[in-house]
Structure formats: structure tokens, C-alpha cells
Length: 238
Image 1 (cartoon, one colour):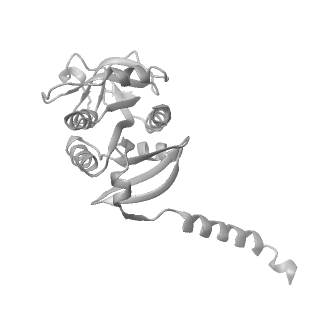
Image 2 (cartoon, helix red, strand yellow):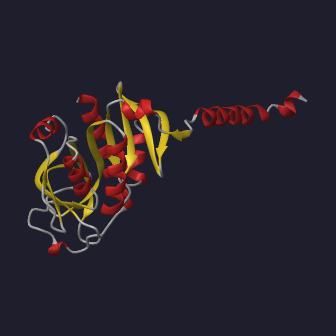
Image 3 (spheres, helix red, strand yellow):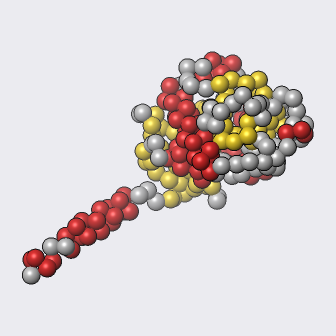
């Protein structure tokens, strides 16, 4: 009988392990006053792949929600921070960012994500820090504080004078301003709202592809991973 049941033991062990891991996963609750009122650095990503690259490197302590937005409270190298997804595009990014800055006590807002390169001198995976963000619709440019530009120089990044956020997928760079070295859809509006509310902001955008209509899932994964590494290192060092 023992011989016939011996094959069940490994399966039982796997079942118990899965049950333990599932039971330990933090459940989502409404964000409480203790989280809202405690000053935190915040990392924002636009979509799932960017978010998952960050979450795979940290210890998630709890998960809470405000409205339809989920917030992960996590630690990395002893530093506790909050993370949320802005959603894709400027309208959704504006909504979630205003909610976040109105709800939480934010000391520093850091964007971690991918970008399309306009400058052909970049390589996929390069992490770029833009010194001034522009809106392709004509909004006032937003400059990143020199203090954070200087702090970013301690990490493996490339600096460019200008980046542009648009509300469409770029397949032709002819309509972009001359200042554009990289392009995305969310950074300008997030930077602008942070500037309005006197919240320090910096973005780490890693090149996933070139703004010529081509795209690659491999490039997306590499860029999301590279930007997550730099954003977390920056949070831990500041």
C-alpha cells in the first residue's frame, strides 16, 4: 500500500506549497489613513509589463485601492515606496496621477517605463533621462529639477535635452518637434501635474523600439527591465 501511494507525496507537497503561497498573497483593501498620511516615494508605470518588471524585484507588503486604481506598498533595499499604474495615454495618466497626489503624501514621483527613440543613436535597452519634457499639443515645457538630474548621473543612464509625449502611437517622426529625442504617451502630463503640485519628479524611460512604426515584444521586456532597475536604484539612493 505504501509503495502504491508513494507517488502521491510529491503532489501533496506541491499542493501544500501552492496553498501556502496563495494564502500569503496580500489581499486588496481600501487604502487607510496610515498609508495616505505617511510620506512615501512613489513609482508610476503605464501598463502591466512595466509594473511587473518593478514588482518582480521588490517585496510587496500590502495592496490597497482608491477607486479603480490599485496601489502596491513595497520595499526595496530597506526603502518603502508606493507604486501605481497611470494607464496608457495622457487622459488616463492625468486622472490617476491627480488622484494619487491628492490622496497620498508624495515626497518624490518616479516614472519607470519604456519609450520610442527618435534619435537613431540609441540602442534598445538604453535608459534615458530627459531634462525637459514637451507636450506635442502645445503645453508649457516641464523641466526636471537639476538636483534630480545630478542624482541620476550616478546611475547607468543617458541624458537628452528633450522628450515628447503624444496621444497616439508614433509611426512617423515628421510631426514631432525638433527637441524630441524620445517619445512616449504619459510622461509629460505626469510631470506637469507633479510640477503644479510642487512634487519632485523624474522619469527613467528605456528604449524599447524606434519611433518608425516597428515594435518588438522582446524590446518591450528588455526596456521595462532596464528602467525598473534604474528607478529602484534611484529610489533606494535618495
